[in-house]
Picture 1: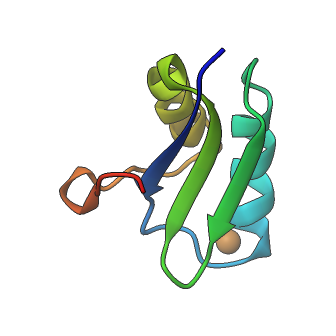
Picture 2: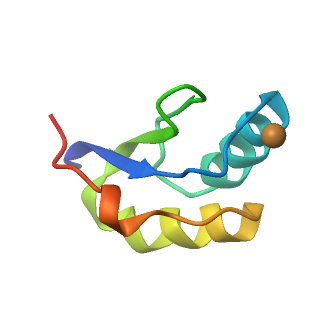
Length: 76
Ligand SMILES: [Cu+2]
């Protein structure tokens, strides 16, 4: 299985609650190996198979946050 790093800009993350909520939701996706929430950069970084992009977006939405598509940047 190919592991990739997916990065999402999530402006709504502000505190440990946000970090916990997103880490929990995204962490439930099968195949996810690592979830990092950077509260200063407002970035959610996910390590896992490349085909989980839609699931990660759904999980972030489920946690109650929006991905800022205008801020997406290429990984790496
Ligand atoms: Cu918060």
